[in-house]
Image 1 (spheres, rainbow, N blue to C red):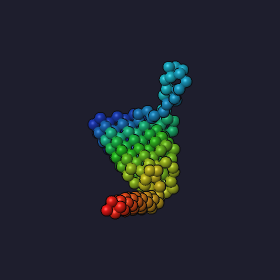
Image 2 (image 1 turned 60 degrees about the vertical axis):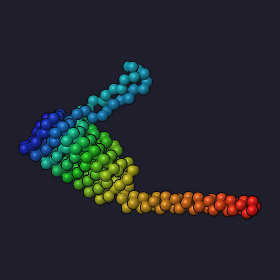
Image 3 (image 1 turned 30 degrees about the vertical axis):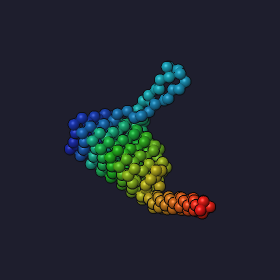
Image 4 (image 1 turned 30 degrees about the horizontal axis):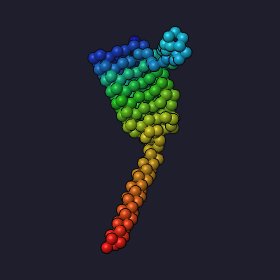
Length: 212
């Protein structure tokens, strides 16, 4: 580990296989440089069917003025390095998997994660509980709304939301359409129920007339 100047390392932080810039703030419990989630699966029954860990030979490179939140984890690369650009802020409980590249001045809110080999370009903002699937690229200055799941790559400058994530305006249009459909179904069901009630009442009236 190489630690730059004026860094702050909170209680319970672990640092391994990392080159760290100046003025980096690690909040309590952050885990930097542990091995990534790399396994060769074994379903053949050979060697008692045990899965084999793939060695993680890369590092974590963290730029200047980065903040890593409490209990956030940044895995080292499997061969390429995991990188976090200068000025980036990760909230508590964020997960950065192996080989991920995060650009400069990115912001990730709590419980968000980027899967292996994902890329966030400069100035990307990620809301809480967002997941970015592996090997995807999110373009510079894109905003990903809370709770979204990014399942494909996107160019720069968009606002994304939903599961799967899409452009926010399209997401709002689809939600409005679904609401209108649901309201129409409720009206149709109410009308059908009222019609059935009227028929039943008419039959009852005819029966009363015959009895009279």
